[in-house]
Image 1: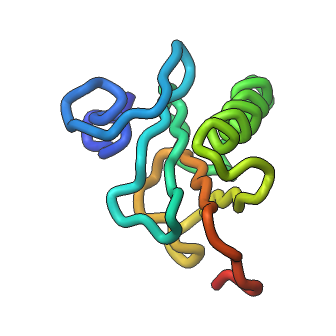
Image 2 (image 1 turned 180 degrees about the horizontal axis):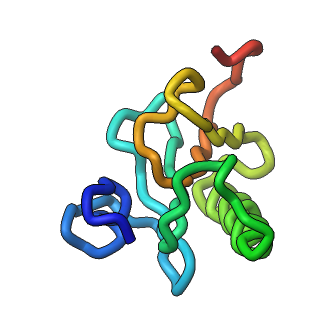
Length: 114
C-alpha cells in the first residue's frame, strides 16, 4: 500500500466509496464522475502504479480483474456492451497512479475515445 494513494485509502476504508464488489484481491466501486450511465472502477488491493508496472507475478490478478469486470457489467444490466479502459501515465489521462480499470456502458460509445 502507498500511504498517499487515493485508491489505497479507499481499499483500506479510510475514504468512503459506493462499493459494488470486494474480495481478497479486488475492489469495485462507482466512479464519482461518471462518463456513462454505468461507470465503475475495479482496483487491485495490491498497489501497482499502472499498467506498465504490471509484473509477471501480477498476470493472474489482472486476468481476474477483467473477468470480474465482465461479471459486474452483466450484473449491472449492460451485458456484453461495455468499454474497458486502462490509462497509463498522465499524458494518457491517468490521474490516480494505482492500476484501475474503468467499465463504461449503458450508451453507445464513440471512436476514437480520446
